[in-house]
Image (cartoon, rainbow, N blue to C red; front, side, top):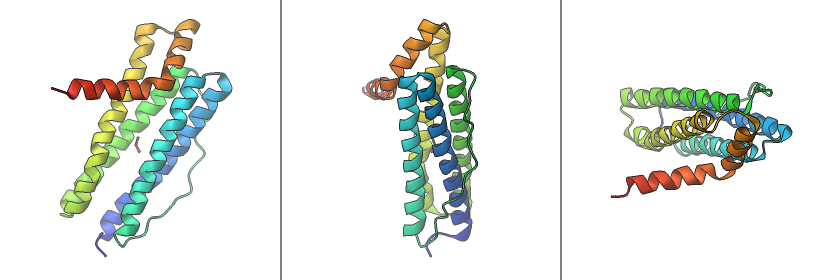
Length: 176
Ligand code: FEO
């Protein structure tokens, strides 16, 4: 087996978190959908798809490395929220937790001198920088645009396309 049992255990813990994050975002999207925040609902459902993609990336990595991916049961996620803004605060907190977990995983790979896993994890390191920036940028909008009904409506409307806008802006900023 190429992947050590220590690495397999650490990645399986990560799979468990990605599964929880997938369901947490579906639950937030579902609350948004019920509450009339259609742009945000689309955003969170897409976010759930991304988390599920992460779960699958880790699953394939373990299974193809001779280890066993363990698909966990997950706890019921939070289903009620005080405001649209609070859903993004929950999202940012979750992404900050993922960043810490990924950094811990990188440290385990370093300690185990597992170069392949270290290299595999770099994609997630970059992804987490993007994810945290995305949520921070959205939360900033509440400061800038405001929190009255019209402002929240405008923010919600902008969310359907915000991911591609932010990504395009970032790519342009990186160009010489
Ligand atoms: Fe799978 Fe957003 O971390």
